Length: 68
Image (cartoon, rainbow, N blue to C red; front, side, top):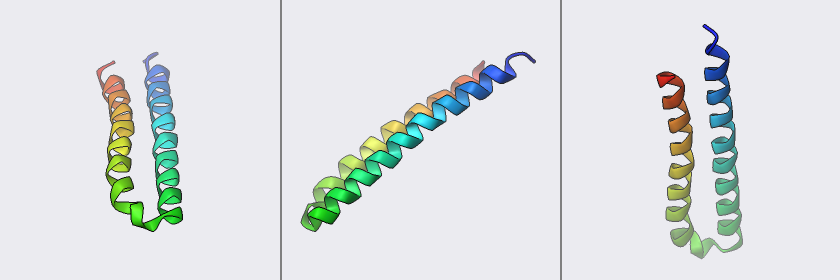
């Protein structure tokens, strides 16, 4: 029962920072494409990979909350 607060904190902290990272990655990628539309094919794949890695951190936090 006393671990409910800890599990909630893990989910909150483990979700806030990856969400900020995904937003920042998307913002900067769209800014780069807006400045140079021809670079879209070079910007989008690394953007998607970076977003996937950031989301993986949130999934790890979710797994930790379920295990704990």
